[in-house]
Amino acid sequence: MTAERTVDALVVGAGPAGLAAAIELRRLGIDRVEVLDREPEGGGIPRHSHHTGYGIRDLHRLMTGPRYARHYVAATLVAGATLSTGVTATGWAGPLTLDMVGPQGPTSITAGAIVLATGARERPRSARLVPGSRPAGIYTTGALQQEVYLHHQPVGARAVIVGAEHVSYSAAVTLRHAGVTVVSMVTDLPRSQTYAGFRAGAALRYRLPVLTSTRVTRIIGRAHVEAVEVTAADGSARIIECDTVVFTGDWIPDHELARRGGLGIDSGTRGAAVSAALGTNRPGVFAAGNLIHGVETADNAAIEGRHAARSAAGHLHSPASTPAPDLPIEVSAPLRWVTPNRVCSTTDVPPGARMVVWSNEFVRSPQFDISQGDSILRALCSSRTLIPNRPRYLDASWLADVQLSGPPVRIAAAPR
Image (cartoon, rainbow, N blue to C red; front, side):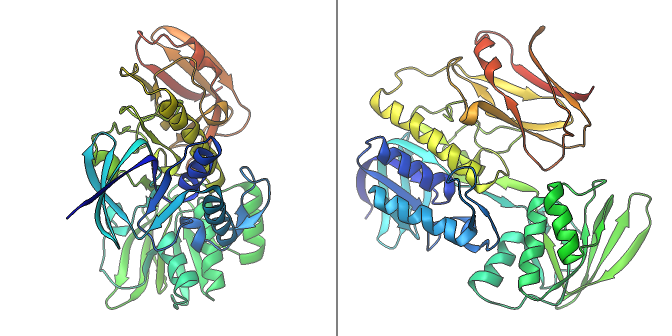
């Protein structure tokens, strides 16, 4: 038999975005706030990401991942929110009602507002269609960190990392901690995509060899990985002996619950489509963190969680009676996506008063042209190269000039 209960606000996901949302909801005076997570502990990915660099933007201090996760879990409980772990949301029983299953059996929870903060995941080898055999010794960064830091398992001796973005270097730190030598980092792009200072520090400390404009085209091995084949842009191929392969980056939001509920999904981010207020196309349902983009840092996700909480609290105090306008914001190549990606009000301001865009290509000294039909809303110039697999932030003040009855807004980027 399914138990039924109600709360004022329900948060799905106990990572930085979800916990920050719960804390903010309680600070704003929302009484019954509950956070659900399918993992046995709250805290999200930072729980098993032992390097430092967390908390700079949201907490204004430098912390390791586990300490950062513990901080948010403790702050959530101190704030008076309920944290329910080992609970999986399985579907929707109504516009603001979720079905779930956990240690207490099946439960149906109805909320006045829902914040979805289910995060993102790296696409595994199978989703990237890398051919070859199916041996043991293949990981994503998250799986690797859980094996090393949570389960204290050995993972090999010689590793190839697929990818050269920021999270790829995090994987290299984890491998070094486990006593594994990184024999190569492989990226199909012309250069690494992490931050210059981090790249230089990693090169000096770990002496990471990076193969650019190169792809892993085959995995070799029977019971366990024995080698990989890599192919350069000119078609030349060679074999690299290794016993571990780590696929990094290539993020996709964990959008299954949002899809099940019929929420709008943006074709670029592949996550929940949201307005500047981080509202979805269903009144009372909001989304934050890496569910709406793949992927931002934990501190930025937490800031978005707070923003979504403020919007959810506003909805609880004054529920919308009619659907808001839903004008899409689109991008042109080489941009891959933008978030927020809907305009529902010209007075709403996105988190940090900025838009986030993601590029597929390097663009030197880019100019961003933001237009609606034949009207140019803003031309934004930058001297900083636009880099794939890294967010770029754009001033969002032009949202006030959007005509809600007009055509979609479009953002384009090109070198000046």
